[in-house]
Length: 183
Length: 427
Image (cartoon, rainbow over all chains, first blue to last red):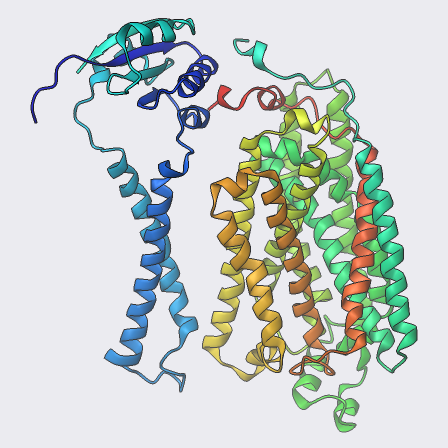
């Protein structure tokens, strides 16, 4: 991968979640789309503010549902195949296709596959693990992002981004600081 | 406080909104209408079983109202021990539901008085003679004679009164302390929290034991030959299922007006939706476990209970029961959007309540010889609709009156300042 140069984005630091959510909502309303919020704990409203609740953003939910359905069908088919065709066994005169007995393992596989696909789907869609991320170049981010600071980063690859205007826009929300982050 | 400028304030008047009186009036009209319909069916179509069907419908109505009252008491204790802001939101409606216990006790009295018409073990005083007369089969005669030390009318009365006394005592203290806590300025809220936790932890244990006894006495013993060790737990989960759907409906309806409006947030609604999902899942898990174990065992004395309820037209009833009890609420509650939308979550709660009616019918009706194995429509069957509908409407009117007697928001709780803040203010 070639070295990327120039600025990755503008990082605004806020002291409270309320201010962060207000700024993120305003940025979304102003047409910014390539941006991210960084908070020390999960903040659902921040995710919603930057459009995470839009239908095209619900990838993990879809992967999880699909994984669960696949897991359930796979186990149920496996049991049916084994009991009916591969190794038919007469158990107390019951029919070969004794579906009540197949339900429990199929259910367990539904849970297992839904859980695994949610976890790995989330990692894949987040492009994790990521050994390098430009925002760590900002010293205040390194010090505060996992303890008590709330960050909004407007990325430079957004068509609406311009260093001067975006900085003025962010400063209108009275953040603690706005810093340029290099790639 | 840092976010104080964005936090909402509780209104000065914390009493229930005027809307609640309309519910009471409408519910009382429904009582009259359904009672008139039930009386019409009784008088227009006289037959030997007419009174029996009224009593069977009465038992079903009593069981449903009992789920709301005692299930409400159980959820009240659960939220005291588990904590969480959803509990603060539901506390007063749950307390109102638990205070309907005297009404449910009155509903219980006809069941006990007419026990001989409802319960085979109460009707047959001499099993051997009844066997010779061909009234019952040998297996039934054996079971009735063998279970006589437990299944007798005197024991039924004594245990019933004891259960109501125990639940009544729990409901009395939880309600009384809750009002004292509101006006208390001397002790901190933690003092009260510990006090509620201690009673509720013990109370939940007592509740699970007494509820198991009550479910065996009132519903399972309708068929004296059958037994299932998971029955009490299944009944308990179904009761939580019904009470949760009911209290969510009540709270969301109250949230249209102050004061609940200022403490109702989507976060807690989402939590309640997730709790519904957990109950939907747990209920089918236990119900299916019971079925799977009995199906695997394939023993004639157990399997017949299911055959009475699956074959001969009952397959349609259990099919509908499955769809409304699990399939529909499960698939709908998977969606985050539905859980966070008020009217859609209310619709799911209505489906869950309808499922409880259907399931109570499926548990009670096929115990009787004139209809088991052979589901067919008779006018008498309408009593399973009209009598419970009248009783539940009366219960709704009563709970509306109870909601009026107290403020609908509990104060002096450490979570109250948090629930008034915007949703992003706390982790």
